[in-house]
Amino acid sequence: MNEPLDPAKLTPETLAHLLSASLKRRSITTENVSEIAEAGNLLSTDGTINLVMYTAYLLSEKYHDDTN
Image: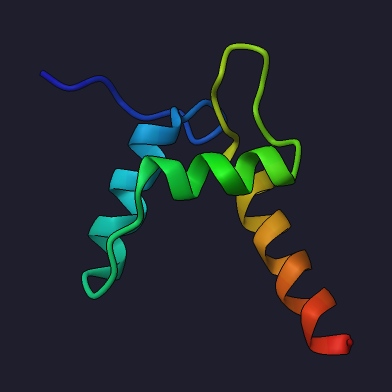
């Protein structure tokens, strides 16, 4: 049986898999997720990523880019 996912503690591999599965047209790699997490200082000390913080960072970057 699979363990339930904790959206506050996803590994970059798990997050990449979830994003790729939801997008269907585009593959998101672990490297893509890790690069974004590092740029946003989103990696916890245990190497996991909070999905809400990851999403918030992406949105802030999008809106920051749209205003410039």
